[in-house]
Length: 277
Image (cartoon, rainbow, N blue to C red; front, side):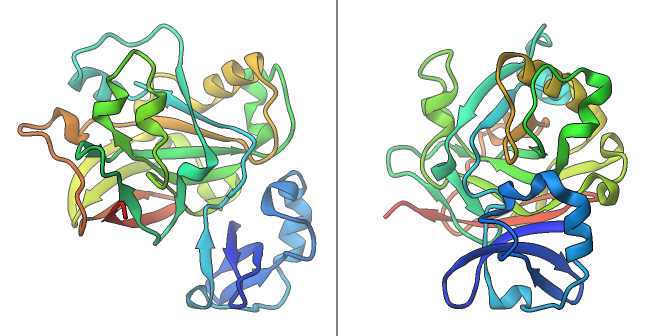
């Protein structure tokens, strides 16, 4: 299944299942998608209901507009570690994003007026499906609701103010998320999927998910040890080599650009770039 959050034509928020024929609106079943992730078997049955909208009829929201937590993993692809001249970390490097930094598929990512160093980071997001703690790696699959595309847009100048990444990762409307959550059964073996990032149609990043330094089960085990993961929590698993900061000269996103993050088995997240008002 492809699970989405959206605004109906009348402006009210809802969620449902995206199918080739259109959208099955399931907003009457739970207040939001994150409240229904624990019941994916029931959702599969409900997805057989009538199509109510076409994608063009609605405004997409980030798949989880209101997550309890967004945990981002830094320096987690070996290709990205190598291009920065670093050694692989011994433990996952974790920083957080805030919900108001996220924008949906098709919505603009905003370059702030304070800096021009707006970089792309194509990533895969893992969405948690149930409340959990101390999840061993061999049971991590039991708590995964699905996967999505993510663009961890970074203001590099602010990221480098200190050893803490958080300021450069939390400017409003700098993180693309979507277009939907693909359930594990539809995504297939996620470690074999391919991630690509394109800027104005030109490929900037290309790697298979198995280039991760810490794989998805390891990340879930680690994160669920120090915090309780909740339904709808998002773990953004890191970016590949090819970011703009390490190009010569550096390549920054600018107003008028269009950036796409495509992951096989999941879909394509597309966002235009605009300047802050």
